Image 1 (tube, rainbow, N blue to C red):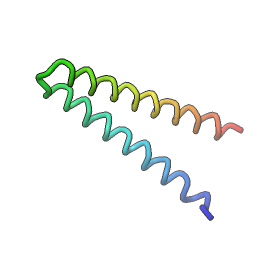
Image 2 (image 1 turned 90 degrees about the vertical axis):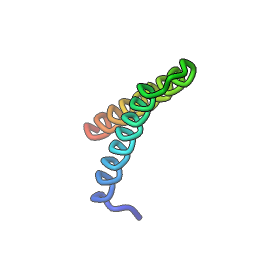
Image 3 (image 1 turned 180 degrees about the vertical axis):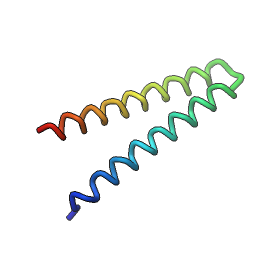
Image 4 (image 1 turned 45 degrees about the vertical axis):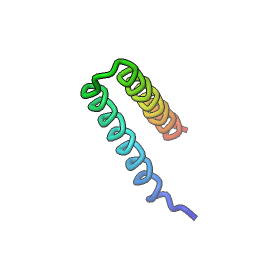
Length: 65
């Protein structure tokens, strides 16, 4: 069973991994020379950013309950 102390660590790690993935995709988008590849990297980056924001909002609302 998960303790309450482990939850924030896992959440922080999840947000950190999302930030790293978003940064890597943005860098790959800048380096890519083919337009369709740039579009794919940009789209995936936006999706991950949306997931990160949704997660943070969920955590914020969950903490207030």
